[in-house]
Image 1: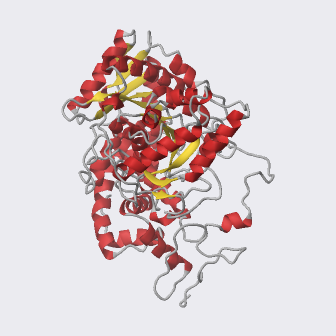
Image 2: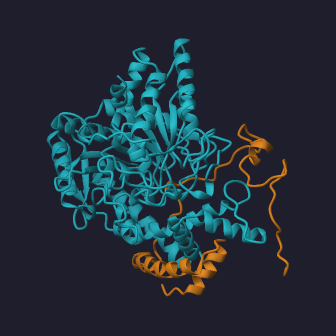
Length: 100
Length: 511
């Protein structure tokens, strides 16, 4: 199962939105195969009769009243850390490329 | 005088402040002076609050002078791990992608320490996004172990542990996802506690793996950890995984500590192969001391713990790859635009390439793979089943005993670079600490002595059932008292003197 190709790593990097260099893809291909080989150990005991646990402390859904709380940021506060804003909105570059 | 002030426990310093023998400004200045003198060598801090800390201290002094009722830690300085967001102080989580970011709000544990009158001294170094066991993955350079500057201080919270071990702060806050509070405590001769999952709010903690992360105290004494635990624990409506219950006083558990009749289970799978001789020796000596006081020591088995690391390195990357998607170059942090511009996706990819370090990229890719269509059941699904099996091991063990014990980590502090080239050997460091995170149960690491072969600190870990954090403070407090009676004082009393070095962390302002 842990046969991983450089093409696969490049695809994962694209899904994860990281512009990895070819050199990084090379390293990660080797390391990912080693790590996946080690972690596949889980399948030895993860038999169909064992239920999965997603959360360590069992809890019901947690709701609150749909009212504006005291922790709401002002527009200025929300934009304070943005790389680019026009004073009231975040500014991003083009959503679509030329070929789209 | 100022050297005496930095060596006091937080409890004793709090008492002197309450008695009016010393002011918070004096105590804060003494710690800032210490940081200036030794942090060039230790590099525990990424940011030092300087004048701001003195202003906070002066405000606490003014409240005291006005006769306000203050808590036991009011006026005591504290260091804050950079994973917690702080108003007015940069918060980077050890990453370039957040360099210089000043958050517009405080994390709940930070709000709570401010309300209790503690004085934040600054932000401590950590592995990038808490991914690591050595601080070597910090984007800002490693922290050095005060016991031996050529060795790692543990991780990810090496900065917090080193800051208290080097007497730069009496208290610190840490976060523990797979051992990031307890393993640094083990290698620096300090105390670290991972509370029950949900005992301390995660609101404002930059998430690594949301189902594993927990904030907790980093201190030099068990009582100090308990006092800080009492400040930060409690239900928070801003964190939907916060446990909606009130907690007993942990400080009371330390003050009334009594181990007679306490049943302590030694986890047989964490007491053998792969553990350094001196680590095991100090571990067993500690158990012998507790037995002499009437504790009953029994061996228990946790057969699925050996699968913990495998499950952890599927669950953690999966959750982290999702959590770290928020670093998208839009709302905060770095933005890198490729030559000639690009679409928002190309800008995002260039930003994340430049802003994330190698370990973060490794785990994001790993998590993305584990969650991919076709692999989800085999990897993430199976890891979640192992989580059930580990919980069942804990349940079975706690039917026989009140607390469990193990060495906190397999070895004493290793040298820089020793495990950097081999991610798997670095991951094995967390073998004793990870099971508690998978099951959500609380754990403490308490100094157990120095390993005879290398003279470096060793910790002993106790684990308790979920919600029974007070048991850890009971047994930890008792052991600390017994060991210090044998040693003739605290373990850190035998730590080497740190010669004077210049400050490298930034004073005020952005990194």
